[in-house]
Image 1 (cartoon, helix red, strand yellow):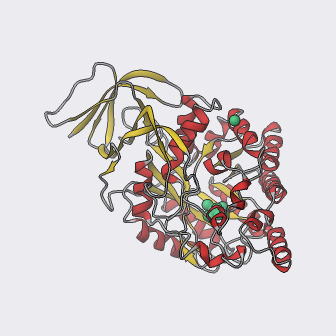
Image 2 (image 1 turned 60 degrees about the vertical axis):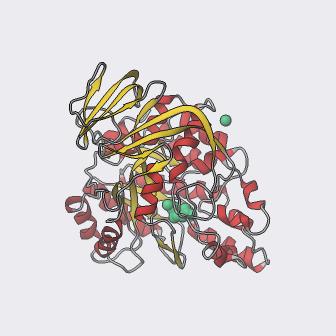
Image 3 (image 1 turned 90 degrees about the horizontal axis):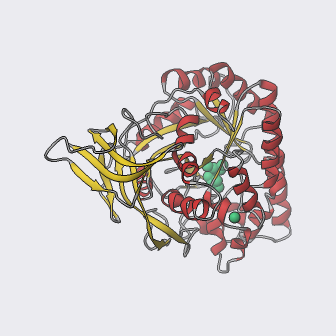
Length: 468
Ligand code: URP
Ligand code: ZN
Ligand code: ZN
Ligand code: ZN
């Protein structure tokens, strides 16, 4: 059975034209005009007046992550389904072995959990400690498991965070393997010191989370990670960059020609730190690391996107319920599990605040949402493109109309939405995954376990060379 999408405005990272897309099985087989049905039972979607995008790729999510004494509340099934409702058809989740746990043991756990995904998934491998087997296991990840990107946390000291020596070992090994290192950049020791100081002063509410990790904490770590990568001669990808200070470090690096890539997330582009002043512990919903920044940083991030310093908008989807999870830190902000939901809202927010807000054009929107993550992480052109041979993962987007984001109606398995009450323009009318309509007119029709694992090969230096 095929799907024929007729007369849509097909938008890729570089093109925009009215035409048709024909999918057969799980592949796109033709893109052009005047395409006709091939089989009697083909589904025809009239996309006139609508836009057709490649399916979104969320390069930074955490489904059912054991973290801070609990587990993120979306599992691979509910989280990928929420993604499909928001036009995201592939995710890259992070295997995060506990300190002392071997990488491949962590991977075995994640492979098992991910079996219920409704949409395609890949993994980054986090290196959370350095042991005798780490180097050979990293090699096995790259050569045999299709995982050529590694994650390190400079924050979360005493848990999953690494020290500088460990970080350098990861970078050197990744360089030898032709793999890419991604970094959560916050000065872990300073965070611990500031947390202790605030707690000792009796400053325990959610808003002190932000004050325990101010922008210089991120700026310093971003610069340090970039300098280490420079010494080693290894490209680097900074995850969830939130502030001017970190952007300055990226700017300096790029000026001297260093291969530095950066990602940000909608919450850092749209929200400011006044969210932490909400009464009745509601600020806890916004406790994530790095934190939401004061007014001013958001415009700097948009400018960073416009100038090409930032290549990817991901979500860092890592939901925790207010009731039963966030409230573990009711008496102490350091115990509030860090993270929030977002996978379903990325398209609408980036469209509304990015495109309609005048910060990016539609091609750049597709680039940030789908094509760059595919290129940087080795999924292109199977993903991130509308070309014959690519996977039939597509979004039909109706720019008319609007909706209001709410935890009452979202598909995230979470009792809060950090964008509660925000209006977004347009709507996803169809999400096609593997050549099947899995979301249509507000209704999901997904299949537990239909998601496939995406082994990857990396040409990170090639993607990095494209940096503008
Ligand atoms: O607060 C966050 N970001 N939670 C998820 C883990 C991480 O640091 O990405
Ligand atoms: Zn992080
Ligand atoms: Zn603006
Ligand atoms: Zn994360």
